[in-house]
Image (cartoon, rainbow, N blue to C red; front, side, top):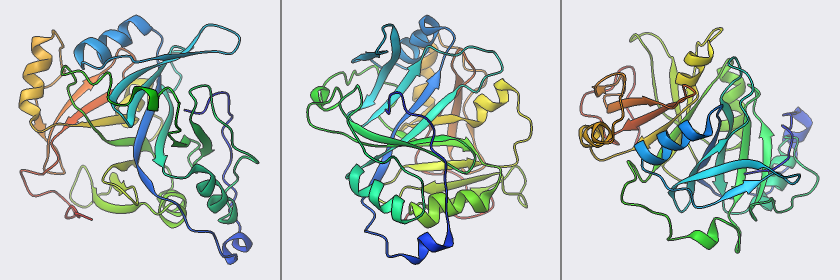
Length: 303
C-alpha cells in the first residue's frame, strides 16, 4: 500500500519507446485490493465474520486516526479497507495492487518505457516500498515489493485462520472504457496477456481476462459500462476468491448467517461462481478455478 501518494498520470511518447528499456522485473500476482467503506463495523462483519479473514494489523494516519485496516487472505494478498467513504455516489474502489520482485527496477523500466513515475521511492508506513500509478481509465494501480521488517513480512505464517472462505485472490476487476489504451498499458508495457474474453452474448466482448506476466492471477477488464450507479459500479470493481468448491463455500456462508443474493451458478466462462456483496455494494466473487462447462466466446488459455 502506498500511503499519502497521489495518482500519477500515464505519459507515453513514441520517443520514449525508441529507447532500450531495462529488463522488466517479475510481476507475480495480485497483492491486494483497496476498498472504501462508510461503515467499518459492518465491513468488519462481512470480511472478518462472514468471509472469515483476520485483521493482523492497521495503519494510522500520520496526524492520528485510523487510515486503513487489513484483512489477510494469505502472506502475499490482502483486502485493504479504508473507512473514508464520504458520499453514497463515490466509487468504492481505492486502488488495485500487484506484487513485484524488484520495485526499483520496475520504476526504472517504466520510466524508460514512457510512464510517469515517482522521482524516488521510499518505504511507506507499512514498511514496504511501492509506487502508485494511474492507468488509462484513471484507476489507481499500485506496485509493491514486500520488504524485510515490514508489517507484512513480520507476519508471514501468521493470521492464516482456518475460517478463511478462500486462501487466494485469483483476480480483480476494473472498468475499462478504451480497450486499446488499457492494452497498451497492461499488455505492451507491463507484460500482462489475455487468457480469455467473453460477453453477455456470444458475439459481444464484455470481459477480458489479462494474466500477470509471472504468475496465475489476472486482471479482468469490465467493458461496455456506461454511467453506472454506485451499486452497479460495485459489481464491476470486484475481487474474486478462488475456492475448490463453490457449493461448499456457499454452505459455509449460510451457516455463518450470510445471505448471498443468489445461489451458486455457472458463469459465461463455464466456472461455478457465487456473488457476495459487502455493506458498500462491492462484490466478492467465489470462483472455482476450472470450468465445468465449455466457456463462451473463446477458450481459456492455460498460459
